[in-house]
Length: 90
Image 1 (cartoon, rainbow, N blue to C red):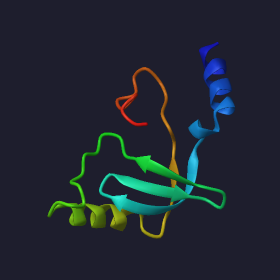
Image 2: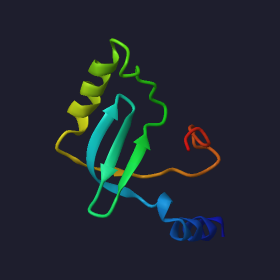
Image 3: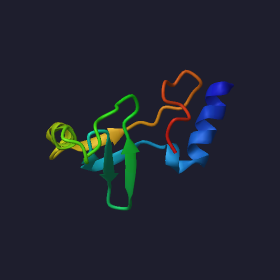
């Protein structure tokens, strides 16, 4: 029964659907994933990278950019009571 409820919640809320598209890195722990219709800002759960304004910020951004550059990404939002980053992001 709970699986049916979770599925209905996912279908009713498109924001919880998988997000697929090209990535643009903001900093070491944030990126945008864009498809033909929209762009979605993604904050990586469990990653605490230095801010861009610090000396370590630019290398952190470059590292994440090297990982995702030229690739299509798929973000699968995880919802549930045991999710480690539940309620930590807007």
